[in-house]
Amino acid sequence: MNNAFDVLMERGFIEQTTHEAEIKEMFAKEKVTFYIGFDPTADSLTAGHFVTIMAMAHMQRAGHRPIALIGGGTTMIGDPSGKADMRKMMTFEQINANAEKFKGQLSKLIDFTDGNAIMVNNADWLLNLNYIEFLREVGVHFSVNRMLSAECYKSRYEKGLTFLEFNYMIMQSFDFLELNKKYNCTLQLGGNDQWSNILGGVELIRRKESKPAFGMTFKLLTTSEGVKMGKTVSGAVWLDPEKTTPYEFYQYWRNIEDVKVQECLSLLTFLPMDEVRRLGALEGAEINKAKEVLAYEVTKIVHGEEEAKKAETASKALFTGGAMAGSVPTSEIGKNVFENGIDIISLMDKAGLITSRSEARRLIQQGGVAVNDVKVESVDATITLADFKEDGTLLIKKGKKVYHQVKFI
Figure 1 (tube, rainbow, N blue to C red):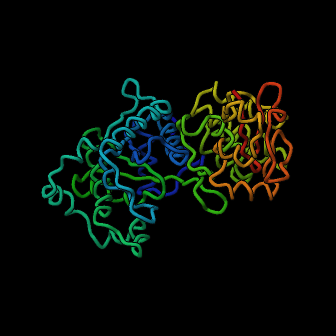
Figure 2: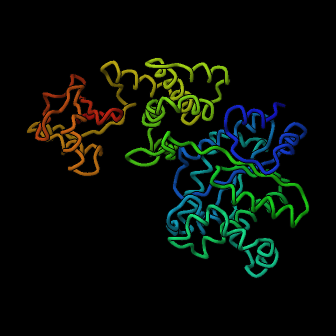
Figure 3: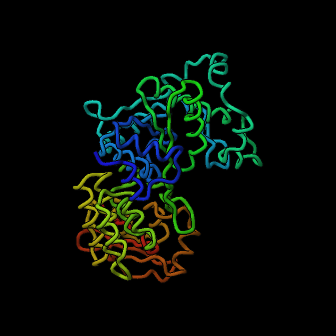
């Protein structure tokens, strides 16, 4: 089997490891059972989860066995890592519903057939813990001073850290211990913001069980300014096609910064690294070819080849003056609305393109709105049936990257 460590290192995934030489040797000698946790705090995974999912897929391709741990129990507490405030408390029903969505999405990206991967929910062992027994058996192995020095807690000192959240590290560490006992899981993986939590689990197993355990973290995908990628003006980039359409998903990757293209090709696709480097070296207008490859490959992995082709065709059609019905986000509005005319700001509001009328006025005044490739010059511009094309559609462009089709019915 390929050494998964070498694959992940070459592609730029690895940020930190607990025992690098031992991990690399372990990958070369045996089939490793490892786990990554996903707390179902929303009803869909996001682009932010995608780096760790791709790492999981590379590991599986190299012959190792993933465990996808759904955090039905830990979500009841909330991970303070990277958060300025305490997470919103969620009901058990909300968490369970979200967990089911996660299961479906992960099953499209990881092969769970014939025991090739395992999916479990930590609610199965966390929700029925005996608190006193847990403190005596697990809590005794954790130093409060050490925990308080962890980055995930230090960043919360000024605003306050609840005792509820303070338990999160111990809970996650206990997950690793349980998975080690049940499935001989010896390695925990996660984003680099999980380093402190992962260390807790590694040390718990080594102290309590006197067995080897390892941890490894991956790069967080960020913009050139250091802001986490996977966010748009309208919110997160979701893996659920009902929340972020395949076309919108494709467009997000098609429009990333030039300097991030090679990194995203390496982390988010299965393209050979020679091809990644060739595409990443393109300059000027040529880099757009690399962006198209990136957008297509990522959309194909998440939504399938058919949706990727539709999104690619729709995107290219926009740049050549047309639009593909059914692929570009579309709003259907009654024909009568346009018989007497509707002002452009109200139309953008109906189409869900703005959060406020003042936002639309500002965009129009700055030349940032176009209808059928014609710049809207006035905030008082009116859209009538005469503005529609023969197929009964018109195309609104907001800023440089957002396209929306309106169709009368």
